[in-house]
Structure formats: structure tokens, C-alpha cells
Length: 466
Image (cartoon, rainbow, N blue to C red):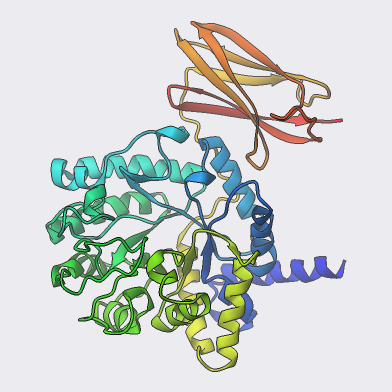
């Protein structure tokens, strides 16, 4: 009971801080809770460390979660997942994904959305404001209905080297013209802002000229980088952009002879903040990339990134040496505060910037599944049910195709998948006996059922009572 009251009091204090815009009460927030807001992690579903994630959210005040491809199976599943994540959070989470379009798009046809054009196609082939806004709006709608409130896009890299393995080769840059890049970023980002979704320009100070890939190892852009690669950032910041900027794990001796940009105070604080005037959140590229892990130890990288001016440390997993990665990052930062290597003032500055961003984002604790207008209905009877339930699909148009009907737990685990053979208008149904894919009986609770036709989804809830 004492633990319950401690957690309840902590949640009340943190929520009060959100209500009063956080600044007056910043000093009253426990230091470890402020540090935890500076961490964003991914996770592998259906593992012990998915449970660890929920503990990190509920008891360590984890600030954010990134969803990778393995976290997204369908529109309903990802909406349910994100609602579940937010439900555990005392401080609303930043839930992020990479939705650039083209090759880098976590929401895509394979998981129930649709294919999208690349930045290069939009910026260099079409080069049209209406087209860029149209596709950005469509993707923003998906994120909004999925409960994702941060898009780690658009790419602000200038297409200096079309063969650059991580950028040009994958058509991730809008254009070789830095001013066109700035224009398309402005159009793209504004569509997400209209739906209350934050964006992150990447990869500062510019990845478009690189002949290597920082995912794999040390990447030196000293001889290839040009000053024009700062133009998109300069233009957007001057125009009032204050969301997020992602730093790159790139080494440029002209900017810092010792450290890559993501670990460089000269690049992040002196150049990005002081010279360009950026006042928003700086988020690192994934700290598990080869450019970092091949050259720096875990604790050293955390220390250098925070000293450099990073506000959010991004990791694509949540496991370190079979322990909670979140707990380890908190420990390392707290230890460096205790030894004087990092000041509490430095932590407060990041915390305030993160909370300012969160206050701009409307967080829906129960995001609606993606359910556009559809020519069919789905229902369950009896509901609640005890032994078995009949799920009926009523089709109102002449549709001749298999229609996937799926049943999920409230946390998004798939329990049943049936492809109904639909042959025109009419009613079709399946019966579910309350068993999982492996034939085991499930417990009492709330379950979701969904059907899909031509990329359009509709869903409902049913209750199993034993």
C-alpha cells in the first residue's frame, strides 16, 4: 500500500507540473525523474523487456518511446499499443516513429497503411507544394489516429552526393538545392503541426555529402561537407521552427577536431544553439549506431552527449547487459552530476525544453483506431460472451475478395486471423471460442476485433466473462 501511495503522489505532482506549464515547479521534480525525461527507447515486442518498458514508464518516468518496424503490425494494433503505453505514464509520453515516406516509412502497405513517395520524388521530381502537403497530410493523419505524436522527419539533408549510402541512395533528401529543401520541409512539417504532431529535422549538421554510413561506423565528412548544408536549418530556425533537431554521428574536423557532431559541444551548443539560434529540443540519432559504439563506451557516450547539449538520448532498444537501459542511463547521468561532470542546471535546461515541447502536443490517452468511412460494418454477438462469440461482417457493396478478420488482446497481441471469402453484398461471420493462436484459452477481459477491405479498417470491442 505504501508503494501505491508513493506512485500516486508522484503522478499527482508530475501532472500538476504539466497543468502549470512546468516551469514554476521544475525544482520540485525529483532529479531522476527529470533525467528520465531525457531518454527515448525502443523495445522488442513479446519479450521480458517489453514488461521492463512499462515499469520504466510507470516508475522511472521515462520520457519517450520510439516505434520501429517490429512494433507495428496494423492500424488497430498500433493504436491500442500506444494507448496502453500512455495509460502507464504519469507524464505523457513522446511516442515517435520515422515516417519520411519512401524507403524510410514505418507505417506502410505491409502493415495496413499504404506506400508513400520518397522525399526525392516529392522535392526533385514533382517539386510541387500541393503534392508535398498532400502526402504529408495523409501520413500525419495516420500518425494522429495511431497515437504517435512525434515524427522523426523530415530529412533536412541536402542531396550533395546522390550516391551517399544513407541519404541520396535511399532518396531521403528532397533536393540538391538547399532552399528547395527548406521549402519542402516547411510544407511537410506544417501538415504535421496542424494535427498536433511534432517533427524532427535531421541529420544536423548535414549528412547529404557523406560517402559512408554512420549506422556502420566512423563517418568522416571533413572533405565532403559544404556550408550550404546548414541552409535548411538556418532558414527554418529563422522562420520560427522550435520542435526538434536530430544530431548526426558525423565527424567534421572543420567543426570539431575531436568529436562527432552528436557528441560535440562546438556543434550542438556553439553552432546550433548559439550561432543559429535554435531553442527547441536536440535529440541524438540512435546511440547504438556503429559510429558511436565502435569508438566510445556506453558511459562515455552518455556523458559526452549530455555535455554537448543533447536533450534526448535516443536508443532503439531498452536492454543493456540484461538490465533496464533506462535505469542504466539514469545511473550514469546521476553519477556524473554527483562528481561534477554534469551540472543540475544542464539537466534543468533539457527538462524545460522537453516539457515545453510536450505542452504543445495534445496527448490523447486513448487514440482512436484508424477507421475511415467504409462500405461494411462489423459486430459481435453475444457481447459480453462466455463460451463463444459470433463476429458478423455486413458488406454493403459488391466486393469479391478475401477480407481479413482479426482478434486482438487489449495490448495488441494477435489471437485469431481469418480470411473471410466475401462474394458480394451480404452478411458473413466467424465464431471465436476464446482461444489464442496456440489453442490456449484466454482469460476474462476486453478484446478487439477488426476487419479490413481495400486498406480500410473498422473495429469494435467485446468482453469475455468467465
